[in-house]
Length: 499
Image 1 (tube, rainbow, N blue to C red):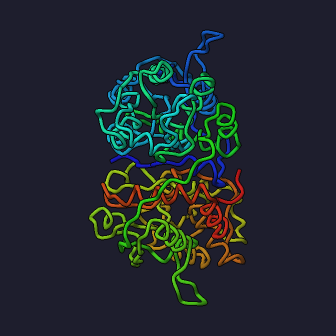
Image 2: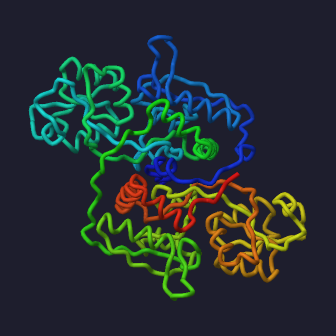
Image 3: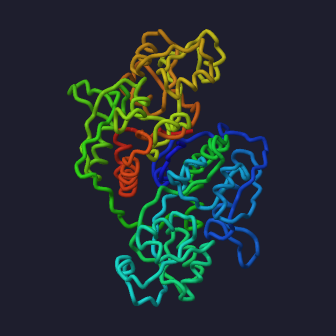
């Protein structure tokens, strides 16, 4: 299935990310792209009552994205109930409607990276005196809830009160107006959209503080295989890096508010097998002083298991067969700084990304034959070392062709080959490259210019694994309380200072 990037652009909003220079962004050559919008879902998209014109976060965000990647957005109003299927069928290039990332939807469309994380909340009238908590609402079987049809909020309503107590509406504005009129007793809605409606009806409705669930975040959707996914992701990443996305989110109130701690899954002490390479610092490696395994992966997975009550069993395995082994169910999880790609996501499920990564060129510190990436590419006598079966290997093929590549089973061997003069450079992810530079500071250096910005790193699982949601929930809680950021700083998993 396609990328399960569940959640987190709260993740990517709060992590220091690898910055991509503006001139490295894709150029769509002024292409016109059709954007499906509902115009009925504030603050994302709506018709401004004063001007009669469309407005909202979606318009500002997509306009900014197109300014960066040279495209022309053509906004087309369409109803929510058929929007996802219409995009899946190729009727629109993109849909922008505060769309929650879910496994089910991701079977028929591709998602962008998430741009915000959302908590679902209960909305009630301000003068409501029959219930003061979510639990009291659920317990009173006479009360009914209004929800927009075909949404994740509708699914949550079914879980909480059953279909007999639900009234469905085509648009959320109708559900909110029904609440104000007394036709329903509450509405379940995403926090951000709920704040938009409260802003418009502050004298009539309120949001309860207790969060119902934390969902997988919101993203743009595209037809499967669309090349626009990578272009939008690159633009969104650059907007995160320079603060533009954060400014937009603050301007439109798209920040989810201060969130209540969401109850984490409890795996009941289950032992889960974790595949690691132990040869990819700073993610996993054998500490030379202690002889013991160490790295970001160990600390992060230990913390995740402490939160969701599982016992990690780390099993060393080689990189070249790791993804297939997980796909075949030989391991429950693999933790190895694994880049999220469409191709890999066809056979495994990914967690939400925990960091974004830039690929860089590593050279010897005394290198005098080239001083830039372009000079290296231009000199056809130079060869590059890369670990086999990696995204870095694919990048090397694109840059210099297979005849100038020397493949290695582990990155440590490629770096040692560089030091020994067997190869002239190495292509490596920024974070891992910093780890090897830290170990060999007198011998190797990383060039400042980033080669590419990839889709981030995530844990992988067999397709359909229930551990994905559990890991995502734990990662989200680690983002929210700052633990993930602390781990990333401690291990240098932050992409370095960027272009």
